[in-house]
Every structure is written in C-alpha cells, then in structure tokens.
Image: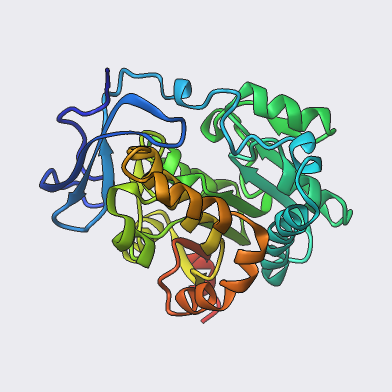
Length: 320
C-alpha cells in the first residue's frame, strides 16, 4: 500500500493546524489503483480542504503517460463526430472567456498538458503563446506541434517580470504543492493590467454533496487542495489579486459523469447496474438532453467547476 497520509502541514491560507478529517484512505479511482491511501482534512479556521501527505513521495508517479488529460490529436480524431464537436466547443469556450477580458498579447498556460488550448489560441495570430508542463511526455507532444512549451514547473522557468497579459490554469491549481507560491509568482510575471484565469473544482457544488468521497473534485491522490469561492478568494487576496468574474456554468456534465464513474469504480460488483446507466449517459445525445438541467445548476453557482478571472488588486485601486 502507498500511504499518503501523515501528520503534516499547517493550512497554507491561515496557518492554523486545527482541522477536521473529511475522508481517509481514498484510492485512486481514476487510474483504478486501490493501493493508494489518500486522506483529506478541512481547516477549522478558514475552511480550506487539503490532502495530508508524505512530502517524501514523488508525486510525478501519479501522472503516467496514459494519464487521461494528456490528450493527443490521434485521440481527438478517433472521437465520434458529436464528441469532437463537444470537445472543440469546450476549447472554444475557454478562448472566448479569455478574449472577453483581453484581445491579444502574451499568454501563458500553466500545466498546459499537450498544448491543445494553446494550439487553438495560436491559430488567430493574436497571441504569443507559452506553456509550462512538468510532465516530459505531455510537453513533448505539444512541442511536436511547434508550441513553445517549457518542460518544468513555473517556479523553475524564471520568466521576466510583468511579461504576460494573460495567465491561465485549467484544472491545475488543485494539483500544485503550494498554491500560494505559484499565485505569488503569477503576480510577478503578470502585467499590471493583465488577467489570471483559473478553473478548478468547486467544493460548494451540488456534485460534491451528492457524491461525497467519490466526487471527481477530490481525484485522489492528485488533488492536493480543494477550494470553494471563499477559500480561493482568501488565497488570491493574500497574493495581491482580486476576483472580478466568476461562474460555475462550465463542464458540469462531463464532471458529473466522472464522479459517476468513480462511484462505480469503487465497487463494480455492487454498482454493476449503474454501469449500464453510465454507458448510455456517456452518449452525446444525453448531454444535449440534460443541458437545461446542468445549466440551471451552474446558474445557481452549484456547478462542480469554478472559473474565476482575477486582476492585480492594487492596479484596480490605483484608478480610484
């Protein structure tokens, strides 16, 4: 068994060592590895949820080359036509969100995986695209597409100060060892009028309440932190940012399906009938049919993913 739980860490936001235990000994549902034992606690003072873990464990072993987010062009091309449409729709949705706040400039995607988002941004010739990806395999795929991807962590890349107009993190912040350090570094490399765009799991979501330990927002052992709007706002404020836009009306149906899959994976024999339901729900037609329901969930700020756009706090205050 790989034990990831030990007495460790103060809360990175408020420094408190007081916590309540949420879950213990959670396996890796995504990779179907039940030798993992990950535990999550919640800070009694500020509410931040974090994983208790052994600092000596090399976290890179939990990101093998077949890790699902390492998407290749071959994978996309092998999707059905409706699935390809939905995939590209999601990437276009990210692009439209960025360009709602910035029309062009230098853009950095942190944890860019194989560079699919950057490839879309680069097509317009309005963006000077950069990516940072610590996994060598994923970074090499993006480089083969002639993308400028650094195979490193952000803190090791040493970008110039105030260089980027936009920095994005799509489902990445929850994976990093110290979110406070990385947001502070983003503040350094972002221009005064630049924007930071982050998407991450939303613990205030209906899915989190419905699925509990099987909620995809935990994704043990890869998700080291689980935020809601309150704890994310506190973190950003400490690092010199203020949130100027937020929504949970993103990615609701795919995330619901992933949580549903985690539930089935936990005990395939017990939930074998749910496996048939999962098979049918995975068809694109059901995503269309159920879209009004998931739109309403997102509209009520109960969606499983939270997207925020932030600016440097002092920049906005200086205009008053």
